[in-house]
Image 1: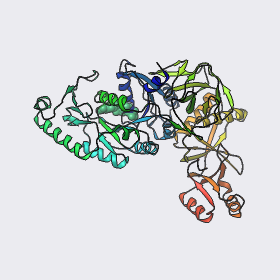
Image 2 (image 1 turned 30 degrees about the horizontal axis):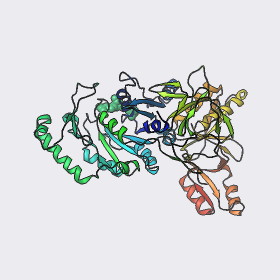
Image 3 (image 1 turned 45 degrees about the horizontal axis):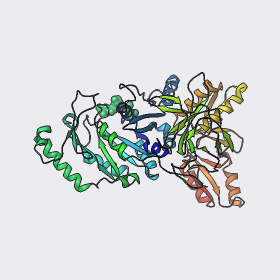
Length: 529
Ligand code: GDP
C-alpha cells in the first residue's frame, strides 16, 4: 500500500462525554464491530469513581488501566481507526484538553435523560474553538428521556453547535421501537433480546409506502413521517464540507449498551470523518503527506509495569513515517534520538512496530527526555503548537517529609510535572514550592506516586491562592512594576519555564491589582507571549 493510501486509511478521534454518559460502553461496542474484541466487558472503564479518592490502590489500579486504554486501534471496513482516550473526570480535564490536540475529529456522547452536562460543555468548547469536526451521539434511548427535538435544541444552545440529525428514534424509553437511518434510508428495529447481535436493517426507500405501517404500526409510522418532515424543514441538509470545517454537526441516536444505533454511527463515521489533518507549527502548516517525519508528544504516562519503571511518551505522527531505529531530532533538546522499540496500539494491546503513518500514535519508552508538547522532526527546527496551561484551581505548598530523600523528591516532582499531572510554582521570596492542580484528587495521586515510584515522602500545606495569573509588565523598568513586585512579593512565583506568576487570593484582589497597576498585565493562560 502506498504512503498516501496509508494516510487515507486512517481515522484518529476521541470520544468526549460527561462521566457516565456511556463513553466506555460506546468504545467497547465500536471495538466489537471492528472484531478487535470478542465480548462485552473487555474494555475497562478508567474513570475514578466517587468515593475512591482516598483509596490509593484504586487510583493505582485505575491508572494502570488508563495506560492500557490510552489508545485503542482497530480496523473497520479497511479503515484503521485510532481511538484516543479522554478522561471525563473533571480532575483530569487538562489531560483531555491535551489529547484533543492529537485527534482529527471527535464523537460527543450525550445522555438522553440528562442532556448536555457540564464537562461536555467545556470539552466541546475547546473542540469548537479548534474547529474539530464533531459527531453527536445521543445515548441510552432505551430509557425514558427528553424529547428528541428538545435535546437537539439543547445541544445547539448549550454547546453552540449547528446540528442536523442523520438518524432519528422511533419512540423512546418504554416505547422505543427502533431507529430510522436518515443517512442510509432504512429502519433498524429494536428488539430487546438481540443485544449482542449485529442487527439486520430493513431498507425503506419510500416513507409513504404502507410497508412502514406494517413494520412499526400505524401510529408510530405517522408520527415518524411528521417528524421527518419537520426535520427536513428545520434542519440544514447534511454537507460533508461543512462538517469537516467544524460548521455542522450530525446527530445520531442509539443505545450503546444494547449495541443499538452504533453501526449506523460507525458506518457514517468511516465515510465522513477526516483523514489525518494538517497541523500548524510555529513556523508553518505541516501537511500529512510530506515525506519527512514530524510529530509531537501529547501525553506522557508512567509505566505501571513494576519491572520497567520508565515512562511512555505518546507521539502523534503528523507527517512522514516514524521508523524504528531511525534518528529523529528532539527539537527542544537539540539532539538526535533513536528508538529501538516504538510501540503501536491495537485493541487493548501494544506491540513493537517498524513503521507508523500520519494519524498513528506511537508509544516511546522514555527515561526523562520528553515533556508534553515536545516535537520530533528529521532536522527541521519547528515546534507544534500545543494547548496552553490554564490556571489551576487548587494550590498547596509541598514539603519534604524525609530529609534523606530530598533528591528523589525533586526528581519525582520534576518528572510528574513534565507528565502534566499538575503545575509547579516556585515562590520568588523564599524558593518554596507550590503545586497547583485542577482537582483535589491530584494531590493524592502525586503523594502516592512520589512514594511508590521515587521513594520520596511529601506533605502538603494550604496556600491561600485562588488563581494563577501570568504577569507581563508593559515596561519592566518602570516604578509601577517595582511597586507591584514589592507589595505582592508574598504572592509572586515562577512557573516551570521561569515565567512570572501572581498567585492571587481572590477575584477581588485581581481586580484591585488591575486597577492599581494598569501597566502590569495579568493573563489567565500561560501562552500570553
Ligand atoms: P462513561 O463514564 O461515559 O465511560 O460511561 P459508561 O460507559 O461507563 O456508562 C455509564 C453507565 O451507563 C453504565 O452503567 C452503563 O452500563 C450505562 N449505559 C451505557 N450505555 C447505556 C445505554 O445505552 N442504555 C442504558 N440503559 N444504560 C447505558
